Image 1 (cartoon, rainbow, N blue to C red):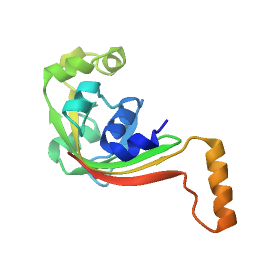
Image 2: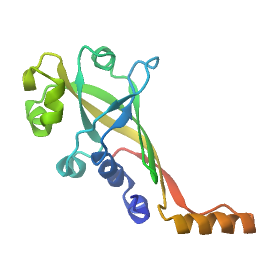
Image 3: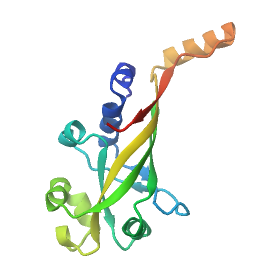
Length: 170
C-alpha cells in the first residue's frame, strides 16, 4: 500500500522500499529493439539507506539482456506497478563482479537458475543505477475513490485520489 504522506516527503526512498518488496519488475535492455523482461530486484535496507538509486539483479551473460549489457551500458527503463503505485524509472545497467554482493543476495531461488552455484560461468550480477523516475501513488481506499469521483462528476472538477512526482537520483 502506498503511503501518500511518505510519497510526498521521500519519494525516492518509498520507490526503493516498494521495489524491495516486489517479486519482479519489468527491466529494459540497452538495446532498444528488445522487449522489457521480468527480473527479480535485489535490495535490502542497507542499500536503500546508503546507496539510494542502486538496484541489483542476477542475470545470465548468454541471454539477450546479458549480451546487450556487456556490449553497451546505454539507458534502460525499469517499470513497477501495483494497484496504488506505479513507477517508470530511467537508469543504466552495469555488470559487476562483487562476490560480496553475489553472496549477500544468494538464496535457493537464485541457485535454481545457476547449477554451477555462485561461480557459475553464465551468472552475472547487474547494478541498475537510477537516473530519474516518474512516480504515481493513489489511495487504496474504495470509499475515498468513490467519494472523489462522485464529487468530481457533480462539481466538474478532477478527483483527488493521489499524486504524481518526478525525481532525480540523489
